[in-house]
Image (cartoon, rainbow, N blue to C red; front, side):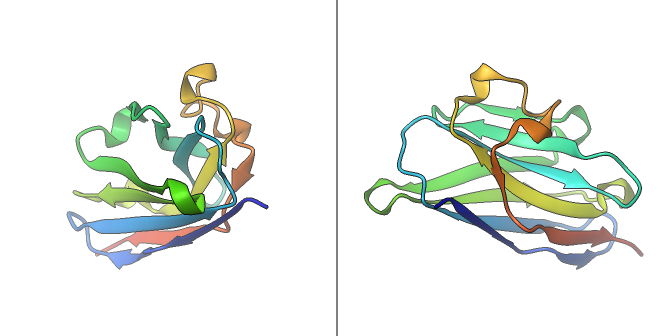
Length: 131
């Protein structure tokens, strides 16, 4: 059973930083795509960043240079931890952030443009940027 649990959200002032974490369990395959997407009230879901099992990363244009996606992979226990380091936050980054995983390579589809293609997602963690 695939499970994803996010943590690390909160409130921060413009220009501040947050680090989101996502504990992923139940995935023992070697090929996958993990990522973060976000959704603000009344807005469509939008992909933020993805990382392939081969280490390739892709970012939404508006977060390039500010956000960094990374992962720790405990292959022995089929557990992974996904991170999103967010710097220079602004009000447009305010949203519920979800981590997600699909059992295909990121190269198979454009998960940043279409985050709905992820097969599994967590419950989300709120990020609020406000002065």
